[in-house]
Amino acid sequence: MLAVMADVRPFRALRYDSSLDLSPIVCPPFDTISAEQQRELYERSPHNAVRIELAEESGAGRYESSAATVRQWMADGVLRRDERPAFYVHRQTFRHDEREYTRTMLFARVRVVPWSAGTVLPHEQTFGGPKEDRLRLMRATHLNPSAVFVFYRDEGGRVRGLLEAGEEKREKVAEFVSPDGQRQSLWRLDDADAVAELVEEFADKTIYIADGHHRFETALAYRDEAKAAADGWTGEEPANFAMIALVAQDDPGMLTLPTHRVTNIETPLAEALERLEELFDVTTFDGSAGDLASEAGGTAFGLVSEDGLRLLTVKDAVAIDGLMPQERSAEWRTLSYAIANHVILRRCLGLAEDQMRDYRRFWFTEDAEAAAKSVRPGKATYAVLLEPMPVATVLAMADAGERMPQKSTFFWPKATTGVLFNLLEE
Image (cartoon, rainbow, N blue to C red; front, side, top):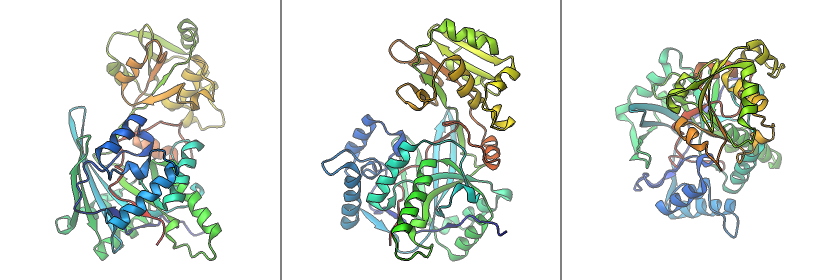
């Protein structure tokens, strides 16, 4: 049986005219934009990418509004398509907790294939709502408005070497500081030999979704629709590919943050503590929420309730394992995020499965202090503080064919929207 290889290629990017400053134009990915931020982005620039990524409602509908914007900006020269295919090297320099990081990404396109092909692997569960939204946007605009953020193993640093070689001779097509303070730069990489080497290097790699499961699944659905409607199909049509932003698993700027859980479930504290104390050693904690979060990891969890902070440490691992989905592997059943969801939140705090899919009832934040401040009358009743999930664990679960619980990872910062777009038609 022939091995299926990852088909990573250069592409003719659609991007803002080089005369435009991208600082007020770029935006975050759609699923992080609040209604208030959407309005702010509209006001920031008449060419802000949010007008494509997450347009405001209009008489024609917001998907058609996005499509009309793309057509108008291409006609006006605001957006221009590069004449020849290229890879694009993107650097983000940012600060977190008083430390500076630099992350190097490679924008490319990848052939969309089912998860079962094994060349592109998911690591988290996804739900239907965002996929339908993104599919309607792709049908209207015929482009990828934002990249799927993916990572890969770079054994021996081969890809890093190819990206660094000859860097000083490449064309820099953008340099700007985004509103959140990130210094960002973008170069075209179109040297024929370097392109061919990168294509070959990725051909034997597995690509892992870091952020953008919905976007990849949507790209596959869009491909299937286009194929069904076509008179003939060669497999080389633009709809066979999706735009990705590749980053090496060991890149020094590959920063993983926790995703703490917050809920407004009405379960009385005394009842919740009674259930928790059957399974965990429960001790009061005198420090800050940030300090408590730093104690979380493996078999330890932070709990914020109306009367303060507590550290939960597993005391009955056998009983906890008995409450986990037994069809899952033993390794999956020990994941801190799986235990938090199935044991702490569902068994002890009493959330039903459908409530954990309702963002009005159950939500997430990477900021432990923000999670703790949410626990107040009229807002939230509990917050569960967790560890950042190690990238090595994410890859191991994906390799084993396991899907981690929703929002087990938060790779920060997100890949910026508006740096490049990928057209899905000639």
